[in-house]
Image (tube, rainbow, N blue to C red; front, side, top):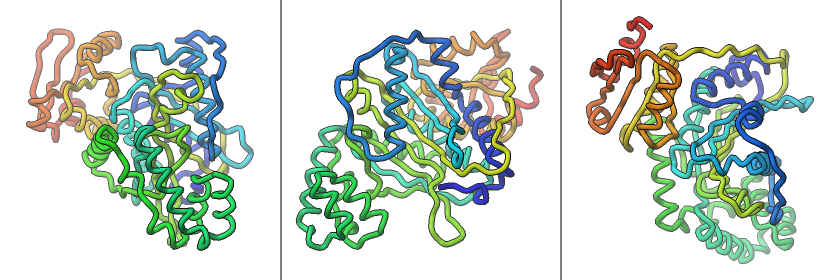
Length: 385
């Protein structure tokens, strides 16, 4: 678990303040406030109970139940939520959720916000460890092979793993072997080898976003979880510790399967959590809403790939910019810009993405200027707004 000493934060409250500010800049809004203001609650009867293996998976189950009860799955637009939990006497957590997006842009948005959070807390060395479990078909084939592998080596397994395997808990058995760094895991099957074409394409898209953000990553087959929870990507962000090991800064992934398992409904969701020790000041500061002067809109795959670097540059240059990166339609993005009444909109389309440039459009007189991306934040800060 992350300790305050791993960061340059003075306290838990300081760390949570930084993470919250970053989340807000990336378009996340407080979960409890948003659902109560925008949705009406109703009672849904669960169809079945998922088999889950970790506290984080159970937390995601509760989140999914709230989303379903408020009918978020009936919304036609994506939603980005954050939540802070300081109820424990020893730990606090900051959670991010992108709901209603099936494409890899959801993983990209969560990871981009997490990475900025890592940097804002003074952590410069980190690696994203990522795996893909694929869809149900891919996961089922992988689990069958993993069970066969463990049973073939049952006489070599330590008691803690053998007992879980005999009880039918394949994931727990493998997980304990990973935790103990048992030698047999190096020969265990990898879930990536069992991905079908659709699952491989999804993983490819996620990795493209990571590479465009210039983030160091490793494909890590040891990160797995319950098939009733996860689908496609599952990841951890790890930072080195003083003892030469690694500390998990954040963990998360895509958990579309939960809503299907519990209610037989579709709620595409990507979530992540940052859990850390409580130390020093725990109360968070009041966060003031910043009125954006600019809106960033993008169209096309290449433009989306550049989106996170653009937002990161604007954040570091303290440019007050809003965006709806998870929204596919450029028209819907621009409608949102009009609602915000921003003076300027920054637009990157296919042509601009290839030329590393952006259109800066005056929303009052509709004049526009082509600006190289390397000069974008300087140009925006010079405009009178």
